[in-house]
Image (cartoon, rainbow, N blue to C red):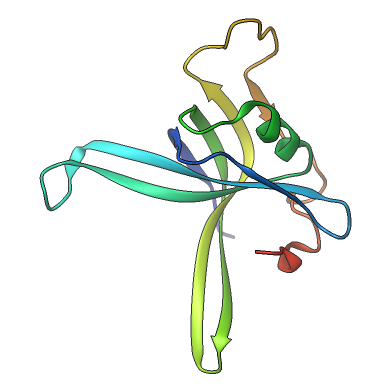
Length: 136
């Protein structure tokens, strides 16, 4: 038995894109930057990694309502890698984090009286059956 769990704290790199699958399931995709100030890149700057995030269902609705570029987030999820062949014999890979839990960090905007976290309580692993039909 293996464990596939990722915990990230970082800043949203772009406003989320919201899409609906033919089944009606909604998803949100966006990027998150994590910076490790203890590790330096080739220019001596703190190392920043970019992560592709996906939120499904009710969590996608929360992302749509509250997540914008620059917001600081805490996320927990699983690493998923998809592959495809744009041309025969040329396999491409795309790695993303499928969010299971998310918390907004950095304080609340004025007038926001709601909670700062959300968890997708969906059945099974929380991902729809038609995940391979994602239109991107």
